[in-house]
Length: 160
Ligand SMILES: [Zn+2]
Image (cartoon, rainbow, N blue to C red):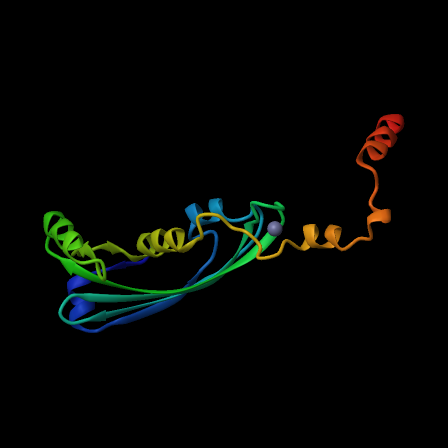
């Protein structure tokens, strides 16, 4: 748990940074390729009057939706948030401006939860290799060397 007093954090221009692992971010761990590890390097800096700058750097293993192989996604994002007094103000401000997301001031603001939320948002909606390594290998085989799929199936059956 990483909690901050947001008003003080911003006023003092405080800086916090650290490294989170799958144990710290279980929701993110569920989205990446199972049984793969990652680390998220994060840095949060407060700014007067009510700003929070968040930087996230990570590299996670995702499953390619085309070949189902592993692929690495590099995440390197920065966000600026503005703290406001209450939820109604936050909503009104978010409708006005696309540049800065509003958050509600809290004495015990959960920075870890924000970092996990933003990591989940930063993941691509669909992960695809630019060129799937396995599909590429098959395409480059000379045609004659390609096994006849029906022949393969027959062999499999006779083995059973
Ligand atoms: Zn692929």
